[in-house]
Amino acid sequence: MKIVDAKFLTSAQSIVDSPSPDMAEVAFLGRSNVGKSSLLNTLTNRKGLAKSSSTPGKTQLINYFDIKFKTENEELPYVYTRFVDLPGFGYAKVSKSLKKEWNKNLTGYLEQRANLQIFVHLIDARHPELDIDKNVDEFLESIKRGDQIIIHAFTKIDKLNQSELQKLKRAYPKGIFISNLKKRGLEQLQNAITGYLFGN
Image (cartoon, rainbow, N blue to C red; front, side):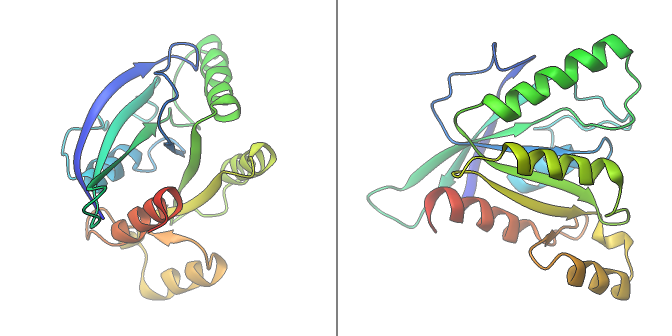
């Protein structure tokens, strides 16, 4: 199964102005500057799909993308899902009042979105033990419903040497290890998503 089309649907400030929850959603979340936009662009093979920026915290809205997969099933040749690019958390330079509103909207989406099936928590492979990521994990575990899963995807593994990478893999045996640069781990991530959503 592979992605054959991906297009931007809309941006929303909160769950209130989000699209109708008529399709399974996969939320990508991570600390500012973890490489979320780059990963979405590489995964979908669409260069400018998600706007990446050198300014951490540039994504302040919830961005929705419609994703079309080609299957090997003649009776059901295509299946669809929605990828959701969430605002980065961490050291974004925004005003305190905006940050408060932003966090409230983000939490509302994560807790209340009925069709949200998968949380893809992106973690910088060079800094896997940051408190902020541990806090996000604890939060996701506390709100996760029985029909939802969390995938831990470690980005920027090309910046690790072999022994550092092996140590990380031992510490997180269920993790997916990604390099946008070298196109490593992307197929594994896609298979984890489609395997859960579509059973193959």
